[in-house]
Length: 273
Image 1 (cartoon, rainbow, N blue to C red):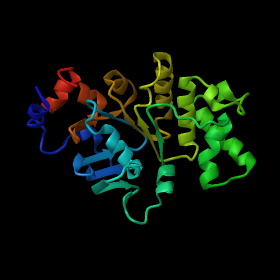
Image 2: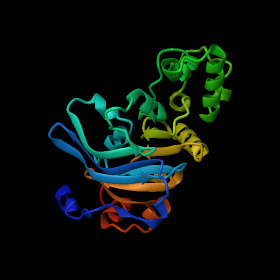
Image 3: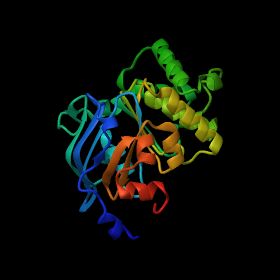
């Protein structure tokens, strides 16, 4: 069936499962739409993200997963011609309010991208860079913060004796965990991960997935993935997206085994995507 035929089967509103109706979400997406110039990419999407859990955004390529996650900390602001409607609320405040400090917003919502992107500087400097930009703590405070972040990222024991080494000398999997350390050194409320394993081999992917499990509870994690097995392994909740719309949102085991939307069922069983 082509996209037009699938679009005819889109539910009028997101289908929610009662297991994900938290009292006090970490992040609230409320009837949010986004355009790139004249092209609309997101359509009145609503989503409550539960505090301290891992939420996976799943769906075929081009369905709007990365656009939505980048809208959460306003990374899409960097794209010319972007405009939005609706709200994304962090701690009750719309992140698109005119008075929002975008730098502070991105400190509160750290982000990890598809490919590791360490800076061409030392391992230590990569981790402490966000603090140097915003807080300017003393040398000892920087060292302590870096150690804490590297421990949380599961990398400390591998790099503690060579913190002055070039970050580009690390393996791909180590580089991605370094980027995770850099994202969490500011102690964000939410960690956004946009297909963080897409450029990694299976061993490095397993290490990052184990790390996501270890971060559960200490951070609210939102991960974009097109890998259904990965979503099943790492996430507590899952939201299925199609053609810029959130079709269904619920506990991962329920969405995968007993989806309510026929589109979700077809995607999960491999009939399209």
